[in-house]
Image 1 (cartoon, rainbow, N blue to C red):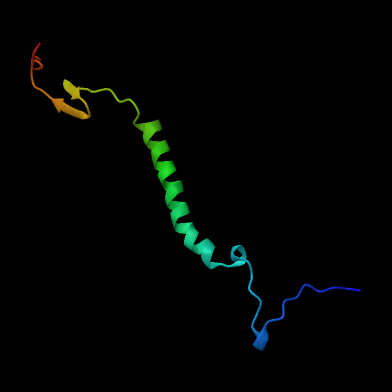
Image 2: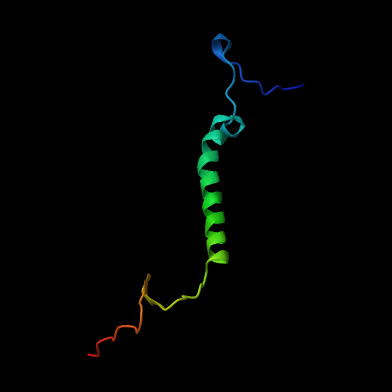
Length: 79
């Protein structure tokens, strides 16, 4: 006795396939996936190429701001 696992739907409708066999979910997921990969590559290049660069030509770093002074650096106030 051979049992077939065929689903018969009324009016000749085709049987539905699982979502991972469809093309549209993969196409819709490709955009965000490529954005994540591009972000990871950008971060890796930024850290490997521009990690710790020295400040040249008399610049002074205060937090994230780099200022260039001509002459002596300003005196900080002591409290």
